[in-house]
Amino acid sequence: MIKPKLWTKDFIIVSSVNFFLTLVFYLLIVIMGVYAVDEFQATTSQAGLVTGVFIVGALIGRLLIGRNIDHIGRKKTLFLGLILFTITTSFYFIQLGIGFLLLTRFLHGVTLGIASTATGTIVAQIIPNTRKGEGIGYYSMSATLATAIGPFIGLYMSQHTSTHIIFSLCLALGVFSFITAFFVYVPQVESSNDATEKKGIKLSQFVEPKAVPIAVITLVVAFCYSSVLSFINFYAIEIDLVNAASFFFLVYSIAVLISRPFTGRLMDVKGANYVMYPAFILFAAGMMILASAHNSFTLLLGGVLIGLGFGNMQSCTQAIAVKLTPSHRMGLATSTFFIFLDAGLGFGPYLLGFFIPMMSYSMLYMILGVVVLASTGLYFVMHGKKEKARINALV
Figure 1 (cartoon, rainbow, N blue to C red):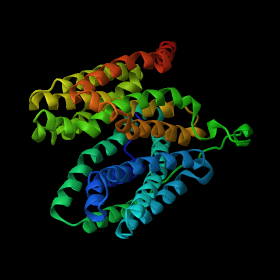
Figure 2 (figure 1 turned 45 degrees about the vertical axis):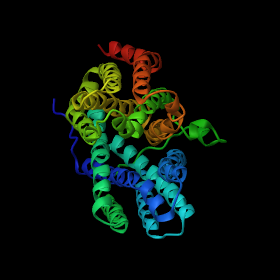
Figure 3 (figure 1 turned 60 degrees about the vertical axis):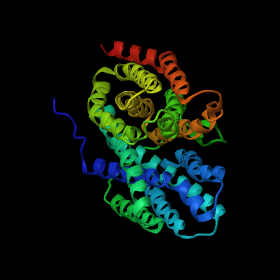
Figure 4 (figure 1 turned 180 degrees about the vertical axis):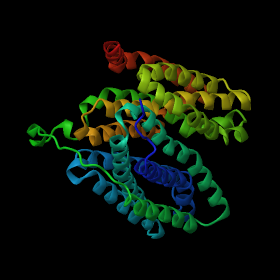
């Protein structure tokens, strides 16, 4: 039997657009705090808000567009998100104080939420059903690459050029993404005949109920991973492994890039449980090894295991969310998944920050490793046992 084609023109373009959007996000996130302090004499708390308010904006953007994407049209939503993303990027050139910078960051986040929800929905639509896990795995690798390349470019450019040049690059990437999107063909989707969806205001208009259980799992593991994103540099200073820490996300990304083609196919053939249960164990092991790191090797080994664990969970849970959902609500399912993912990554550092004064980073990572391991039981209850029953029914 011939496999349906995955690497189509449309798949490559949408994945590329997602890469550029995510690249701009991570490129800016590593420089905005310092920029706010240097240019506007912002306080430490204001600098943190300049960084974090972007994620709040992205959450709101997803909430707004998730219920409306199929009414507007998926390609039109992508155009809307990209043109607004480009316009708000140009706002960085306007220097009217810290208040305007905060507003710019918030609006920029909203536009990213709109555009990335559109790309995630379109790619889930154009991937053949029999290759959904594999396809979403490849698609999400575009974001994984951006998480490694973006911070590197941002830090390098901040040391060798002006913020004006950095903002110009981000603007150019936005314009390029908008132009490229014209070449994407998005098939029409049959609208739902369920009239009840249009009566009154209901929670189901903002989130997809069928995607919520797996999205809750995503929230928990993203909350744990946020500790790595936010505190790894502080931890490296504490244990005197700053040089090794600079390679942490590089080895993380390599581990994800190497493993995702195999885990995506494994999910399509054997089911999600064959990926998720080992991923929980690998993620937990990575956190515990990170907690006990005493040299460069163990620190980077932790990065590899966390990449194999959380990195594959991220694509697998996204694939589960869209597989469980009717095609006319796929946009809402994608939005729901990213809302929970962003909430875990965005609010995790703030909440975990309350515990830092009470314990060492090592202890924090050890505790979160236990939380990840315990989450295996939550996954079994909320999705794993249903997945097992579904697979057994097919045999």
